[in-house]
Image (cartoon, rainbow, N blue to C red):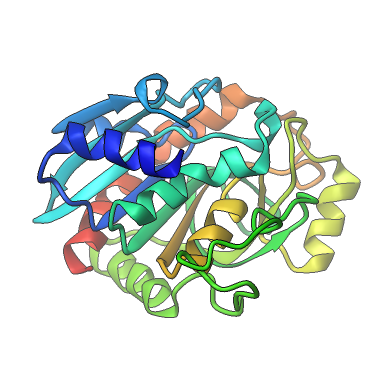
Length: 267
């Protein structure tokens, strides 16, 4: 199936060879509306699922950004939608086979760190996997990665510094911290958020970690950015909703777009 998927996409994009991929999280898809040369809807692609979450258009977008060939996932697949963990990470394997060397993963997240505010951008420095799933379980594809991959530096240290440096240069105050993933779709309870903070997490969400693990296993360099869209339960007395997540992401979309476009120039 993987070969069929890759061949199908290659036929659609002809001689466009992507070197950078971006997975765009909830409310952050406008980047793919701004830079859009070739589009392929997920429902056309063999092996792909269909995004069912508001804020995820569900298409691959290919574009030249600052001289670099970029493919963007305008919407991702979530474990909580009922997909197997292998379906969730399938697009990452496809991106690897298309020749992508750098994967920028973005998400909308809840702020566990009390110093974070809605619409802040956080550079992901590490993650904690509490999804109860590991996407690398099963037969190992030795052509993609080793059986027991090192996860000590999932998020490329040079990219962490590049993000921070770029943020300073263009006047964006970036947070940095550890992202903790739970399955969702329910938001975390106050007790779970206290647990997350005790474990050292700065933000919580329902994605990113499986994709980052597979990308690291496959030898891709990973950069992670969270848009802090609310204060997690117990950090704030305000109730949580997906509408508020999208609202905060929309507020942050301009600085997010500026940051990513400027970083791509330097990759």
